Image (cartoon, rainbow, N blue to C red):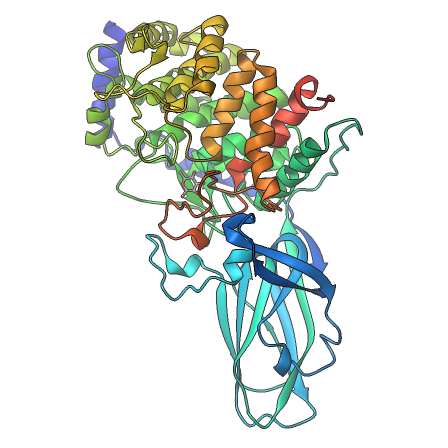
Length: 548
Ligand code: RAM
């Protein structure tokens, strides 16, 4: 306990800025150099658009729009485009990269500039929904519509921004009434750092599992750029929570170790003056963190899970030892966020401007889930310490874990058979699942809770794939294999049935238009944290690869 008090005092002083430069500038530079040394080469693939589709209304399709009738466009590159305005091209799959087009005169002379509008969409509804009434709460500029004015023909133009799409709508929004023009070439330069072929699943694997596996691979591949990005359409950056799930998936997929190393070092090299990690960082124009007035501390904690699992997978202790001081630092804020009963205190977290996330479901009370996540991170940190022979440096952790577990059990309502969160005593998936992953209850009790939960329509459900990942993991940890199989094949399978080529950032089966940003087209439809079925399918073949 004494140790905890000293630690808390130390923490307070650092949070409030007394202790600066927890890691020296030269240390951070060295980490950034290692991040740079591990920059992967991007693999380029050129795709030539040749197919056209019609996007039609269909109430069974995602967001009620479906792409149908893929067909080769006759004379796309050798006839006038004027009567083709509004065409929707289909690349055949989701790609991330750069779009170049060449356009020239067709039979007559242009007497005016040519104005073309391109709309790039990951899903069909994105190219048919008007963006005019945009009412989202993040930048409108994420929407992928680009208007290009060409002054003289012929011209070859590359759209400067990187794009992420399957569908490309092209409209003539201003051209000479006396002249015609023609596209002479188009090319999509697709990029990824996923550089390995993944083994096929055995042919007896259920078809839906194979489909999910393929789409999960695609999702991960597209998010693998020069870091593990959260989404190639949005936000193009490294977030630790996404990184944890991507790395877990990539261990069973492309196994790009360079990319994990780069991501780990980038985070460390950009740590705050007080030694805590930023929850998200950018690579360009030079590596820098996103400075915002709130702090997603639970993501900093997940860094330790990434490092622990990385070492478990690769045996690369050299990297882990190099970054051990970073991991050791991340958990030190935990005691400050607890009340006198060793329970997570939302009030304290609010005061410290912590963004309590857990999941996108806005109704979620986060007390119990945060308690679970903190314990989970402490556990991973101690595991890591043990594997590196550093337990003595974090000797307080086992004691803290057991106090926090004991405290968590006071939130267990034996009558209902659930952990209840906050003043409203809310019952949610998030709370039960994080208590199980934190091993506050044993497997037997976890199993009972989860069985109850799955039948309970009143319990607050997850708001997206990020939390669903942890639900599946909890089911597997409690030997509820059939339930885990069913959840993966209905939830991610639900996206497949609605036409997904890549898995989405947000998916609520009852409502295709849910958006944390208040405008569905701005959601990311190829999102890192949604790629984890590949991890489940490959790590647990006995559950997912056998006939059902
Ligand atoms: C979103 C990003 C990212 C996620 C955070 C919490 O803006 O999509 O994936 O980690 O929020």
